[in-house]
Image (tube, rainbow, N blue to C red; front, side):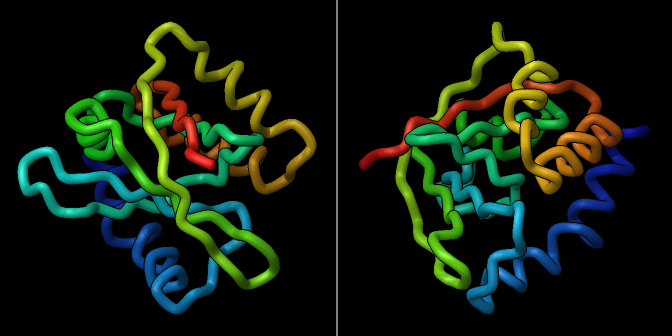
Length: 143
């Protein structure tokens, strides 16, 4: 039941305004856009995610684990792109290779990501509140 409710909220209420902002060239603070390749369609799929950039790695704690569509897409094809802020209004696409880390502690990863950032702390709180199965994904970005 929780999975269905959170999917509905994300699909119809939470993600559309963030996607519209990205389409308009405005990246809301604390957000990034993940682009995967659809496992069935082969088409690019874009999903707003929390900004988990640390150095040359991008970290995601997926709130629905392997049930999340973007995680299933990553497991089928690990080549992804992430659109991140690069300055006040500029964004840039970074390509990378994603890896699902089943042995990583997602709660500890969230604590590390949230350290020193109010936006990341609030994102971690929301992800934990809406989660059904936390799972860590690491994207190794190309230079």
